[in-house]
Image 1 (spheres, rainbow, N blue to C red):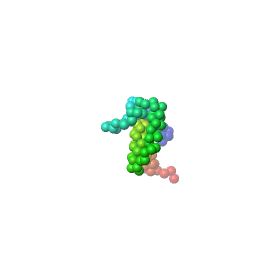
Image 2 (cartoon, rainbow, N blue to C red):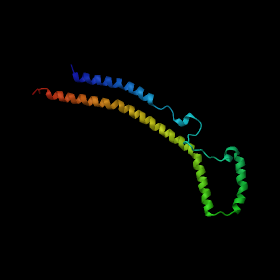
Image 3 (cartoon, helix red, strand yellow):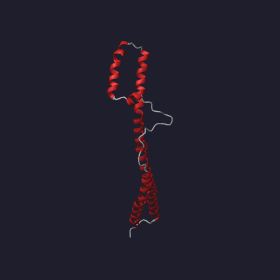
Image 4 (cartoon, rainbow, N blue to C red):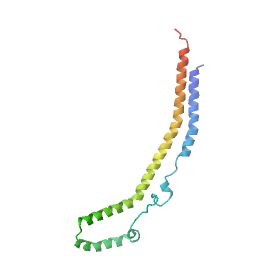
Length: 154
């Protein structure tokens, strides 16, 4: 009778049996979907109001293009200062940044969701692997200690 082989097989059976409840617990803790996909509204921080121009919401694209073409000759006649030009550029950049904010927040929320899933799976693996590693190392150490008390055959 090989006692060492028997304990090794018992260890494997118990390790696989312990994997089942850990897997079920890990799946139960897994987030199902990002919060941003729960609603169609942009997920903005509290107190933040998305400021979008109403002309872009209501005017068809042809009307906005025609208005822009009508305004070009008037704008070409007027000279602007460097300060006005910088202010216009900053305003346009701010408008573009605010328009892109909901999409950026959505992408960030999806990335956080994926990181959360990986974290839950990794934690579940550690909950399964660390106790098994400790039990296995204690078993190996105790076998080594017991072998030290046996008489040598020589």
